[in-house]
Image (cartoon, rainbow over all chains, first blue to last red; front, top):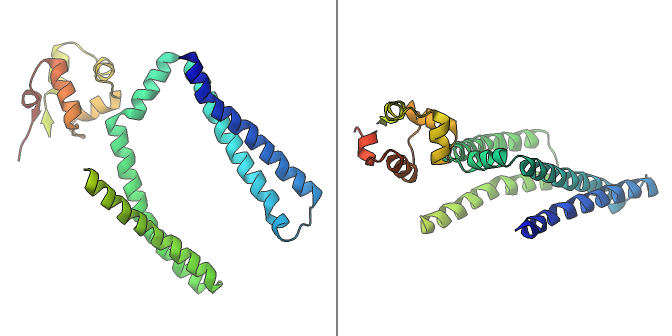
Length: 148
Length: 64
């Protein structure tokens, strides 16, 4: 049992290591070629951003696991809170509201970008992103209609 | 939906925390159920009914 828990933890330790390495590589690349051109202009920043994100996220999960191990009662309570049907219903409703709101925000941002006269390919990317949410919505409606 | 949860709980001298732990839900869910702010799923309704040894209809009152 203990082994399987440790094995589950292994991926998060790997995340900490990889995140830290990626972060260091990003800093190293910045130091190596501060006035980089082409891909070297953005690659270090991507490495630093991704590395910091993976490192932070994995560290947070490991700390949480460690704290829950120290206090099993708190762990049980946290599990109850996570699986609580009312909490889950609240989260589902909040997500649905957020989606409805983001449809309006997305449309407004499209208008703003158009008025700012940005390049047409940026507008097209934004339109594709805006429309993709409806594609995903239709996909999940179909999926759940078959399942439920 | 109205229910007799608070009445039944108090009759048996059970705290909200204890009922929540027995049903494996949060204390806030028990409070919301008692105040009629939240209607339980059929699964939770069965759990509540079994906990009190009653039928669902004895606890939850359906009004059209």
